[in-house]
Amino acid sequence: MNLSASEEIVLHLESIGSAVGLKALPKLGAQLRGCVIEGGLPSCIEIAQDLFPFFPVKFLMKDGWGETCYSAQENTRNIDVLSLHGALDQIVPLHFGRKLFHALGSSKKTMHVFPRGGHNDLSSQPGYIGALRAFYSTGTKTVVT
Image (cartoon, rainbow, N blue to C red):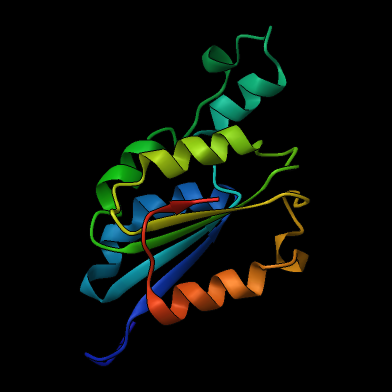
């Protein structure tokens, strides 16, 4: 990718893409300004174990993104991060999104929870566009809503 020195990148990650993207952040270099995470998850195994609590998921499933929280802590230290999550998300329940948010190493992070949002409908929730505009225009501070 050829960017001019004045251009910056904001990575927009969704769902399982958050795990992949958080591990890839160091490869984007100094021009990375921020990261938006929608419906982010800490680990595929944790999600599966939550769905099947009496099944030995961790022994039967390999998770290539099992270090997502570590990546979130280490790879977001110098960037702004916006986390968006639906309170009614049934695919990645909100407590997983909060776990990932708290693992983020950024001192400039914001979490916005949409009370009526699910996993695949955040863009249609009231306040979604406003949250993105605020993030892109003014940077962030640590906030959890």
